[in-house]
Image 1: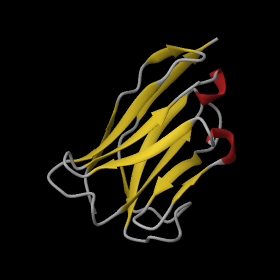
Image 2 (image 1 turned 45 degrees about the vertical axis):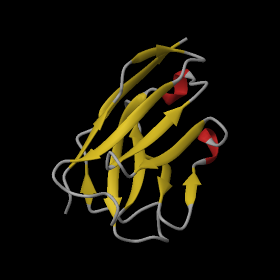
Image 3 (image 1 turned 90 degrees about the vertical axis):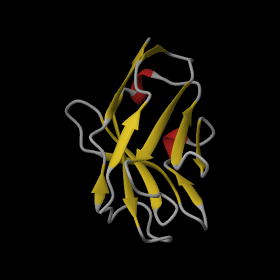
Amino acid sequence: QVNLVESGGRVVQAGDSLTLTCDANGDTLRRYSIGWFRQAPGKDREFVAAISWITTVYEDSVKGRFTLSRDNDKNAVHLQMNNVIPEDTAIYYCAATPDSYALRSGYGSWGPGTQVTVSS
């Protein structure tokens, strides 16, 4: 288990950019693969993207717009969101798993989430 916290969520307009950050309170993210998920109102939580030391994967709807990166100096993972659309509106969660291959599910540690709202 690792304590995660997300930050960076805010209200933006369609076409804007923003960066979400996942930090580990008192722990290191280097041992984990980090995934981002989102849940829109009335919908199930869905996979967005994940990064391990082997690969980075993205859900199709965010490919080319979102970019994941690790900041090892700051022990954080960033989700850069460009050209956002109203359909990106959701609560975004980061999650950690020790698995480097199965990145779309099986996460054991979750942050509380950060709200992203995209206005048209």
